[in-house]
Structures are given as C-alpha cells and as structure tokens.
Length: 275
Length: 360
Image 1 (tube, one colour):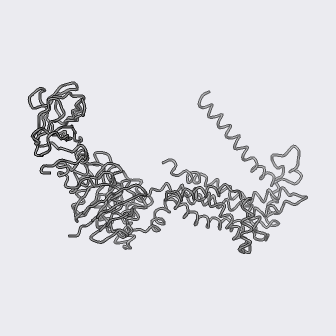
Image 2 (cartoon, each protein chain N blue to C red):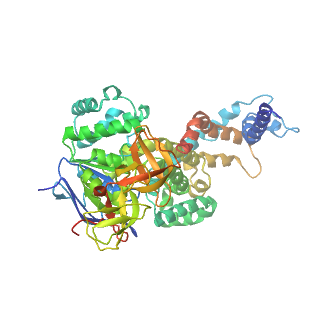
Image 3 (cartoon, rainbow over the protein chains, first blue to last red):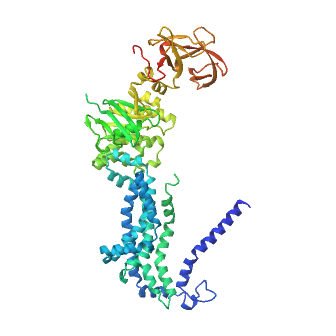
C-alpha cells in the first residue's frame, strides 16, 4: 500500500471516529428542533422535517434561561478566580522547590484529582452545614467546586512554571528585585499563556458542574443551568425537545469558545514540551 | 585596606554534601579574578554565594568591608552575567537593559538616556527595540553585559558567560570583556572551566577542586610554580606530563623512569631513593636524534599537527605528549631522542601530590 493510500485510510478512520464522538452533539441539536412526535418516530429522523425554532424562544422564557446562565457564570467565575489565585501560588511553589515534602504534597494533589465528587459531596455538605456556609449556597458551591478543580489546575500550572528557567528569576533578584517582585514581573508574565489556558479549562468545568451545585444549592433562584435543565425531567413526562433546546443554548457558547481557541489551548498545554 | 569582596572561612553544605570547604579569598578593588576548576569543583557555588543566590553555611562574606551574609541579592549591589544570559524574553532589549534602573525608581527619561549610553558601549544602538529572541548569540551576550554595566555595581560576577559562543567569537569576547573591565575600573569575578580563559583574562586565578581552593595567584605564577599535581595538570595546554622518578644518591638530582634518561640535577634537596612524580610540560621537551648521550629514547605513537604547532604522543607508559613547532618530519613509529631542560621540571610527592620545593 502506498503512503498516500495509507494516509487516506487513516483519514477515513479519523472522520468515522470523530463522527461517532460528535453524534450525541448532533442529536442534541436535531432533537431540539423536532416536534414531540418526530422525536419518537421509528425509524428515527436524522434531519428535522420542519425545524421548530420556536422551541428555543419558548424555553428562553419558560425555563428562565437568563437566570440559570447567569448563576452558572457567577459560579464559574468564582471558581476560576479562587482556583487561579490559590492554585497559581501553590503551583509555583511546587515547581520551584524539590524535596521530600514537595513530593508528598504533589502526590496528595494527584490523589485529590482521583476522588470523585459524588464521594466527596457528603462530607463537604456536612462540614459546610456545620460551619454555616450553606446560608451562602452559591459561595459554598464555588468553594466546593474550586476544591475539585484545584488539583487539575495546579498540575497544569506547575508544568507552565517549570518551563521558565530559574536563571531568569535569579537575574531579577540580582538586578534588585524581591522574591515576590520577580514572581510578578518575570515569572507570571512568562507563564501567562499556560495559566490562562488552564484557567479557561477550569472556567468550563465550573460552568458545567452539576454534583456539588445540585447538593448544596437548594434555592431554585440560585441554581446554575446544569440543574435548571433537569427541571424538565418529570416523573411522567420528559420534554425532550425542550431539554435539548436548553442544552444547546447552554453548551453552544462553550463550544464556540473551544473551537475558536482550540489552537491556543493545544499550544498552551504543550508549550515547553517541544523545547 | 578593605577589599572589595572578602571571604573568610566560608563553608557551604547542601545537606550532607560539602560544596565549599574553608574558602578564603580577598579581592581588591579593580581586580579581575577568575575562578577555575573542573565541573563540580564549587566555583559556581562560590560565585552564587557572593551574589546572594545561595546562603553560606558559615564564615563571613564582606563587600566593601560590610558583612553581607544575611543580605538578599538585591541589597548587595552586584551585577551578574549568567551562562544562559537570562535575558527577560518578554521585554525589549531596552527594557532588559534598564530593568534594574526601573526597580531603583529611575525616571523614564533617565532610563532612556542610560540605555542609549550603554547601547553605544556594547554596540547595540540599533537593536534596542528588539526582543531577545530576535538576537544572535553574540548580541544576547552583549545585552547581558550591558544589563550589568548600566548599574555601575560594586562588582561584576560572570558565570561562564562565553561558553555558549562559538570559538572565534569567544576569543574576541574574551578581549572585549577584559577591555570593558579595565575601562570601567570594575571589580570582576569570573567563573570558567576553561583554563585558557582564566589565564588570559584574569589578574588573579583561583584554582578549585572539590570545594577547596587548591591554589591562587597570578596566572604565570600558577604556571611556573604549581603548588600541587592537580594545579600543575590543570593549568597549561596540553596538560603537563607526569613521569615517575627516584632521587639519586646525591639527593640533589632525579632519575627518570625512562629508558636512557639522564640524571637531572634539581635545586631541590631530598632524601636519596625517594620516589617522586616528575612533571614535564610538553612545551619544555625537545627532540633530537635517538641514542645521543643525555637523551631518553622514546617511540612515537601518533602525531597531531595544527600547522602552528605539533603534538607528538609517545608510546609506552606513562604516555608523554611533546609540543614542537609546526614543521616536523617525525612520523608515527619513529624513535626519537628526548632532552629535558632540568631547570623546568617540577617534582611532586606521589603520596600527598604536593610540589616539592627547594629549601623544604
């Protein structure tokens, strides 16, 4: 087989795999435009006969989408800010020092990454209830989600910091800067891309988070979109086209951001790996 | 007299590793000092300790008479040029040069003026707005130098600044660095593993090994009177030959362990029969016809000619290297006679490796 043919075969396989992965997304968009009857049509309709654009207009008002999206934004922003500030500091320390304690800390951070939220949610809920944090449910959710996103962020950021030569910082120290000054003037600007990309990924995690928000935020008015969507799941009727229209409204901005920034995201995550 | 930089019994431990052992060094104002030694000898640690990037474990470090053991680098007012240059990649050449001034709170106009001045000194007037990425190795090196001189510091510290340059540029920069030092009347400490750099640039050379200063002094003093076998072998290129020998019955001459070798008179009095290592510099050996009285006969294993000079490698053990001028018709496999100037030999105690001196 020639090289060109081999490449073609690989391309076909890649397209098929991509189609397989993207099919649920496609199904979401298609279903959101279907009528109730065509959703359950046998054989299934792969294209909506008459796109029901009004599904979107309906749920926008009925489901309080602006409020839910706003709550999601507040939570995602809070998570990103807390994770960013605390995590960048932690990552820097873990990147700059090498000893047994640091190794132990790093191992612990990796372990935290492994623990699933559904396992952690009960102790967190009990703890928060005990210290009265549940009176500020959105803030409590932000804290809990930050704890989840922190290890991921710390590990990505640490990699970004490690690509910055130590000599640059030392040069700044000799040039007359303090440790903190060297960090803010030299290290942080140079690690900026890695940090921003990691923060973006954290933001997306916060934006789509479900488990902690569902357990901690009882008040419907403060719930994020991920929970708002489940309001359409009722014991007897499941309003699929409304759910799908809601989901489409919810994820399209994220998808758009990802598609637009995907080159930067990939570069940001692999920066330094090639040097 | 207060020295510009003074180290007194300085020790540095990294955990169980003893990096600097009782280092004593006094550097007068205006001197160019080279710290030289093989990798891992502690020369960089010593420099970084002076800069304040490492804390010394004990001893006293003074700059202009002031004890600075506990001062952070920024309060020591020293400038450092790093091996990797450590230019700030996100700043233009101008900002790199004036970074230290900015930290001191100099006004924008003042910084601009200084940047122009320094750029003229280092010859980078046209590149002030470039990023370091867009500069060649030699230009980056100059920016790193400029960043040091703009501050007018109490001393310059150089950490192998030329080792990333190609050979021709290195030779040129060697002269430039030294010329700059003289022009600024600066005090410089220069770390290198290249003994030629140390010998050609410095007023005072400090040879280190395993955290210990083996010997310090003027370059030619180290060459002519090495204190021990290590310094003798480290200074000079190609390295000194060592041949075992025995003190003759008169206690004032030495018999080399070479076939046909003459008895060489020395100024050193030692016990007859004492085993010694005899150091012979390749450039102090001369060749003649084999079998002549007073010359040792050796076989030549290989000949390397560089045009200007020629290195002959003798076969047998110990291996000898002989430097002659460029035109020789000796070939590998030839037998030659070797004469040794007795006044240029060095004797070392094989046990302690210390040089034997007359009157000791």
